[in-house]
Image 1 (cartoon, rainbow, N blue to C red):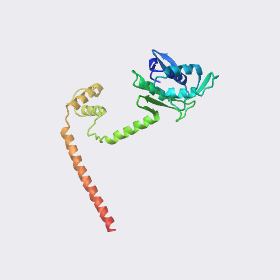
Image 2 (tube, rainbow, N blue to C red):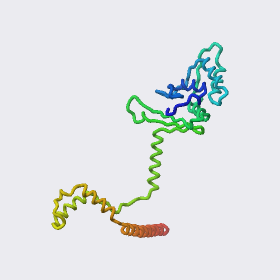
Image 3 (cartoon, one colour):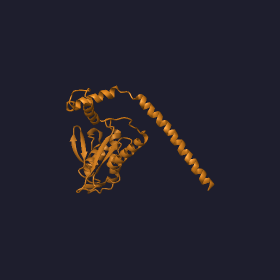
Image 4 (spheres, rainbow, N blue to C red):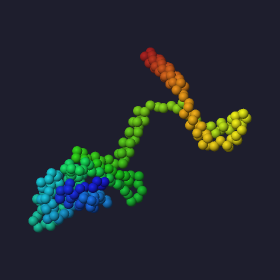
Length: 249
């Protein structure tokens, strides 16, 4: 669990039951709940301790009160311990009652891990649960990954295709430097290896910054628009021709 629960936000009954569902460690003015394997669903509690906790919590709105009251009514006079079946209520519901009443907590976040004693593709994973006063939401890592994939696919489908008109590599510039020096003695008296990679990189940045290809870009866009119109005219003409042949047949 990622959220420490303040002592003042829990009833005595909730504190007792949650401390048996989970392991609990003090954290400041609250308790940090965790389970090394999984939360317990069948509890064995001291009857006297459970009665005292229920009595002290009876005036607070909690779904746990009704369940414990019903179970205590079934206890025989000589019983010292009572079994509490919590399969009828999830521990998340107990935490939700706490959030609803809490003046400080807006949510309780819980993380769970699935492990396996040997490597299996389906033996590992995680789950996250977010508990608020209005909702309890859970999702596994597989579900989250599926959501990420759907979002990525939707974004890719919505994004227009981008076409690169011009790109040059600094290695091409390095090759051209060698060709210029080899074939144009008037260009420079420097040797090819005198031109460093930093010289080439700085020159490329300067040329890119000073070059305006707006006219060439506009021309390419206009040509593509004309080509798209021509493609559509050709495609529709072919469709009409095919439909005409089908009707004749």
